[in-house]
Image (cartoon, rainbow, N blue to C red):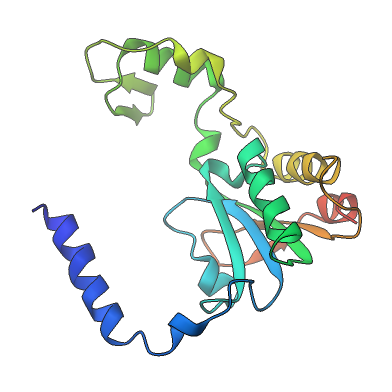
Length: 191
């Protein structure tokens, strides 16, 4: 058993011991909202948004981008589970700003091993085989945080399955201060 696996299973046993009546939480989120945010380990939506278990849906992916799958989750969140407000929250110092579609496609073509980055850019440390499948994916990289939040709010707002009655707010989480900074143009587009 790996060290990480043991740590996770031990933590789960402690969690189970204090689980209490959480098994009776209802399926719909109690505060009726959803957050689309990044998978970055420095972000804890429960803490920065004051969430407890059962409060809200949190949808996470690389960059917190409005991918087809993220929009699918938001539509289910609203249509079947009653959320009434949505937040798109990107963050400062995001890893999705460190590469382009071309860079990741080239790295994947070279090998499927983990790449490294230094002051000269990305380097593949693996040796084939790689795959050309990466060139068929839009990796939704980020060149400008404010613009990416605005793009994502607009993409969600314009989707034919998203009702105009749901407000969509746009924010950037500052990883250095913990502040949520509104992207006012995005929030305006989400009205």
